[in-house]
Amino acid sequence: MNAREEELVARELLADPDAALQCFHQKRWAELAALVRFARRDVPVELAQTDPALYRMLRDQVTRFFLRGGDALCLERIEALASGQVALKKEGPF
Image (cartoon, rainbow, N blue to C red):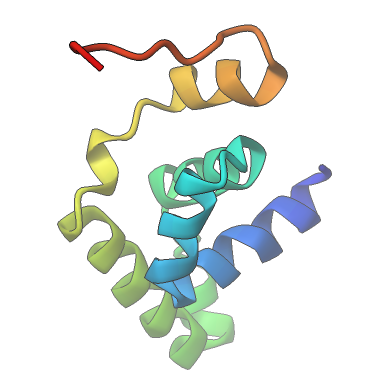
């Protein structure tokens, strides 16, 4: 996925938090990693001058992402899952 595709995926998932949850459940790790990377990089400040409405909307969406627990996602682990280097293991008695 190139940088533009990642940004589009991240913006789509930020707009619909339930879609981000579906990515997690469907193990679409590359899309989830794009979302986490975008949110951690934050919205470019330059956007506030060129498109203030878009800047405010994205800032609000990133803030909601973190308030819903997005900062608990480990980007390194998600990237490893996306590349197929790590297999999920079940823990617990079941």
